[in-house]
Image 1: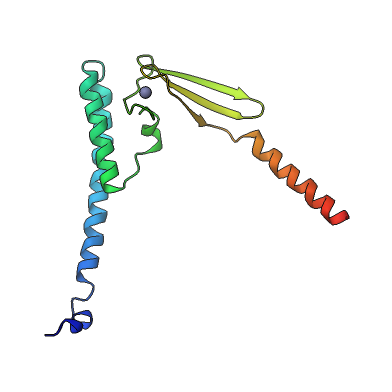
Image 2: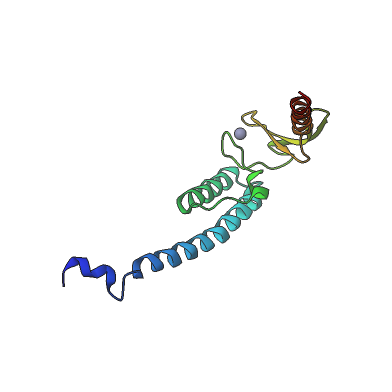
Length: 144
Ligand SMILES: [Zn+2]
């Protein structure tokens, strides 16, 4: 059978489909495994922080290898800089800020590397300002 006829044969899409199915299954398994590993890490951090950080690195490696995103609720408990597990009151400082021009945000400080990450809770006031400026400029343009 010449090679060219393979495309029109009965198995033309066989490999592609099976790859898709395998990939989806793999991602589904990975999601469960990542959640389990981070839960384990939270449980073991008080006894053995090294082991907890090992769990986190394994979870991160699985996420990267399978292109699965770590859920945002869990991602906040991993330091963005040193990739260690953050436990409130142990190696993490947790503050809520409310600033006029920035909106409400949570700042998470890693106490082992002093890295601060900020998560916005309520939209910034800046964005509203930008929109207002646009409207003004539009009106000016129309009047001219
Ligand atoms: Zn850190």
